[in-house]
Length: 361
Ligand code: SF4
Image 1 (cartoon, rainbow, N blue to C red):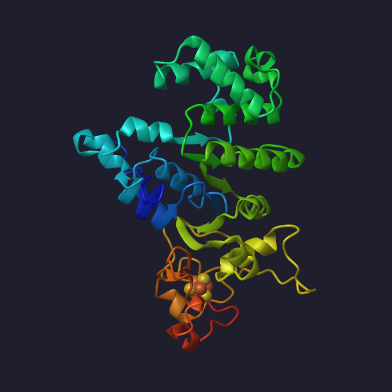
Image 2 (cartoon, rainbow, N blue to C red):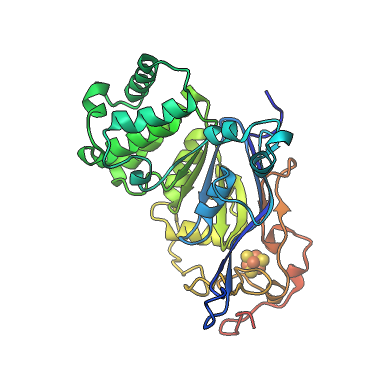
């Protein structure tokens, strides 16, 4: 077993450029920095939850982590092997790219992208098994699918395997998609808003099932959600960590206790405030942001990108970009906020009075 983390993401950025092409003479090109300078690791059987508003870059980061999106800069390694080097220079790779691909699986919010609506489940699930395990006999493939259906509570399996996706309920569909992801016995599953479309009552059931199967398959999860109460539930039950994203950056990452009981970043506090059942305001329901609007990702604010909305912003926040300030000795958990550093000049910087502009110029 390698001593390397299962996944290791170092200084990764992903940018997309729109317009300004050869025949697009009427518009300027615009670059969206979807992911900015992100570093994190995912260990064996760890659950790491990425949380943040829509459009903050969670999905792009998740896809980059499993090798489905190439980073613009930085490296993504699986058990120490640079994923993109394995793909582009197979001769130098200690782990073949195909092996990496089958080890890193995804569950989408939209199950239609995993299950062909025109095929019975049996056919949809036999195809990847044939492709990745050509040495298995037909009987062995069928047995593997049956066992997985039993394990996700879809029994008797034959009743479900003869159905088309539209003949399943929402919960059954997500279970079938989970089976599709587990077929290849992956090391990591990216669950991208995998439970968001389910009724609230089914979400907890699905998260419990995912955690049960994590034990059985020794899988790690990168769990993406816009809902802090779901993130808290799965992180608490798995002993995992939570990473908070804002405008392409991880602004805070820590254990569930650190994030929920002692958040360092004002944006984490704002997410808690906005999440029903999490915030006990003691009677003070002051809205914890200066502005509701999220800045344009093609024109990021100067200094700390959160400063136009931050109720704690000071003058220094308008001109300095916060680096990662580590809050543990192992340097895995951090916050990108000057307030996490007691020695920072932030504490002597003039406060921005209410009504004064904190927009970038
Ligand atoms: S660095 Fe300044 S603006 Fe940014 S989150 Fe911290 S206090 Fe707010």
